[in-house]
Length: 319
Image (cartoon, rainbow, N blue to C red; front, side, top):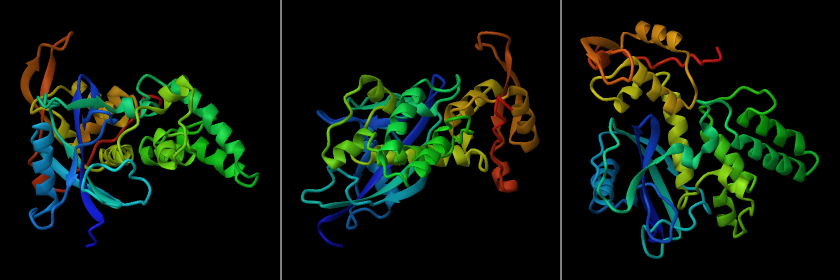
């Protein structure tokens, strides 16, 4: 391998804290937030995953549980400023991993913290209705669509409408990366201005609507993880990697909603859950619900050995 190419490993560590989906981030002086990341040493590291687990623990003092490989990111020009992976590196190939944990425990590392996804993607949370930031983004995207060549205008407007659910289009919660990439292409994402050596938009309302930028290509990696996880909810029982051993059905629903970013129809959600045979009651009640005591359930993890386990359907409240 050429000495000017470095393989980096990035971890999207996801948990639920106080009803919000959060990701583990690290911040170094003078830099924007980043995902936990580090280099892969072919001579010293036996596998990517073992190297990832070791440096995440070293950086954040947090031990990873469930981990799966996400994607390999190697686009040229999308890694500036470079994550500090090796002196003299001119190209960084980053292998992203998705990790899920049932508790966002304090890391006790001074430069690491749990950050809500809405901090980075404020347009992705529809639980309380259409996000108000979309009004600002719709205006900015409209300007971009009109600024192109006449032949480009219709296609640009169609993409904006489809991805950001404009003009009555249906919201597709899984297309997180496509939405971020459109904002990058349009020159609106702060990372785009940084990578192109341009000034960021000088509009406080637009700056807030575009969310917190991240180091290097880390917001792209985070968007990929969120889209992957939202899709995987529907065909694998991964949500139970984010729940404690015992949980109420209301808490389970809130966890699914926090990840999917959409409100669910409670009765239909519970009917669909019953058909999966993924949970069973524990015969005891949770009394600290703030209302009537609710029955506690557990994930039937043994179902994974019995048959291919399904995910959870997302019966939206509007349906």
